[in-house]
Length: 168
Image 1 (spheres, one colour):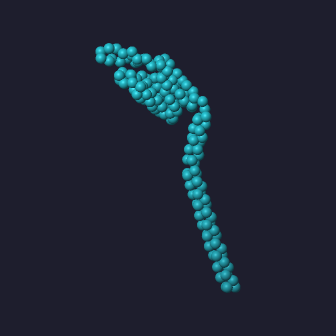
Image 2 (tube, rainbow, N blue to C red):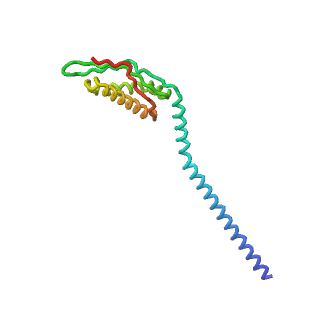
Image 3 (cartoon, helix red, strand yellow):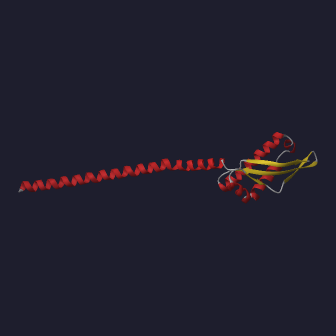
């Protein structure tokens, strides 16, 4: 009977040791599965955003361009060699993203203010050259897209078009 009691005690300890090992193994498996799932979501969640942005840009390529005239015309005066000079220009913006055209309309006072300051800081003599006009177009595009990025988080204007440019 003593032997039986000793065997019974030994088998009970063997069972509890097996249970501990089983619990440790299950805990390790859960930690590994959880870590693997977290790594998957961290590594592959960013690519979904990039793919969505790329597909949105690809969709815009097929869209027709939309134009918005920035009315009224801009008129800027200059003093050149003691004479009063004027530049009057009409311009439009072009974009395939209608949401950004709407954003231009919404933020028109801020955009017009920025453009008036840009135009009045130019040199009258430089604006008489084709290179000066092209540089002004690029500066106006950069100014508009800068405001849109600040206000909406993205640029989206593809081009600035001068529809009338008068200097006198």
